[in-house]
Image (cartoon, rainbow, N blue to C red; front, side, top):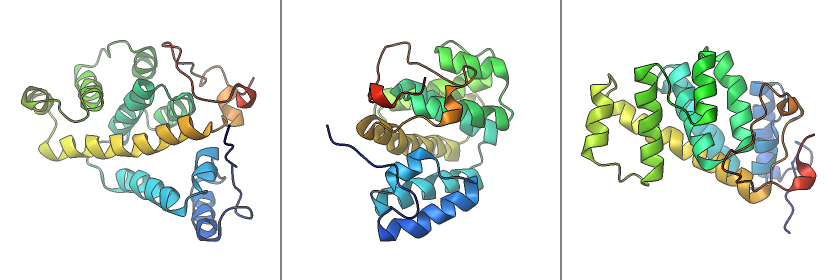
Length: 199
């Protein structure tokens, strides 16, 4: 099996080193996802650019952004990102019942957030061929035409991270072993190397 390194600033390809330094400044540490993405300076820069653009410029609220991120993490069965975005969702003020509903693939009681989650899932499931009725229902729930495209942008960001984790077997962060964060795909999908799974 092909192994990927989780790079530090010192071990990363030269073009990734300043990018990882920026990640460390922003996060206070280098997440293992970014350490893995550093194998390709292009992939690392593309992912961090999209992630930071969403945070800085999206009209969806930080909590709404997390609902979309997490819906796609769960849809893709990404244990690393679901654990990470459980932490980020709490930080963004997403109600606990909403967090748990998404993790459990259960309906969200808040109808607006359920419309947001469902639209994101349908777009991912249909590879964008969601149809006019899905777009119309999303807008009828109080969202905008621009936010249709913001959902697409967030999905693109998650495709990069989720697929990277599946293909490279990104190990979990130590803090993700916390039972309050840890998530195991109820559909039984996993692409991570069992030798790298946190206890």
